[in-house]
Amino acid sequence: MSRRIVRCVQRAALLLLFCCAGVAWATVSVASTVVIRQSNTADINTEDYYFYRVLELVLHKTEAQWGAAQIKQLPYRPEDKRLRSALMLGKVDVLWSPTSANFERQMLPVRISLLKELNNYRLLLIRKNEQPTFSAVQSIDDLRKLKGGMSSQWTDAKIMEYNKLPLVQAVGYGKLFKMLAAKRFDYFSRGVYQIHSEVNFYPELELQIEQELMLSYPNNVYFFVNQNNTDLAKRIEMGLKIAQRDGSFDKLFNSIPRFQWGLALLKKHQRRVITLQPLPSKTPAIIE
Image (tube, rainbow, N blue to C red; front, side):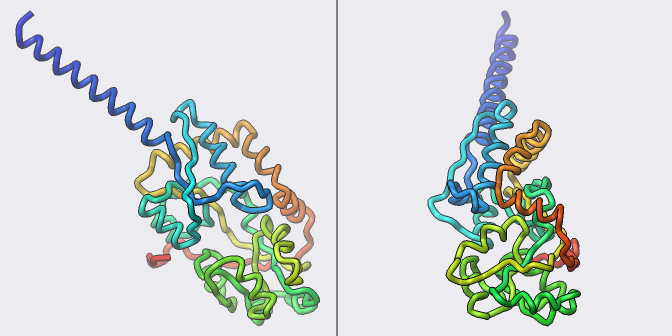
């Protein structure tokens, strides 16, 4: 065999070796670990219980195509803006959140609604004995005479502002219940899938679910990944579609008691629906 032929065979063998190594490395880097904020909980009444298990389901359903993967949690729990920053900086791989035009510019969404239509409808948490005030609300103009409360870092706050609904804003979650009880504002808008358990989080505050009204606007909750992590986005989308087809997504969804309560309420409700306008899809880019 001539030296020229030997050199060609050696180069081909080296090229094949590098290609195989590259493929193996890519599989491990994409599939081995998915980092999220501290989220795993055994409390079925918290939001993280459901979303963590959806992500587990997605990764399990795609093992054949992408390899085994495990979820790794940060030892701390960034919220809202800090969580989004952590994802954009590569400190976490996945988060779940109501979507917005700005969020979809900053991060890569997997556009499959994790809550179906449940987050498109909202009820009001109010103080006990104040139902007559809300029974008098017949329109969005009537609602504008009252003040809502909301975290300043939530998409819902932007929607309420866009609809000219007076809003008291704060950073955080738990403090909003206490601010409502302290009469800093009149109502706290919550997803129909959230409010059933939340009304009992702070029994000493004497809060109740308002009985006659419902807010409505598009408010899908998606998984988001870093804009450069297209492989993970593809894996999550594939896993969600597989779980939808084989019924395992619905099985998990229907196992959540407050989701069941929300679905039953939507099926039989006779509430006055106040429809809010969604945020325009083309809005100036801002850092949220």
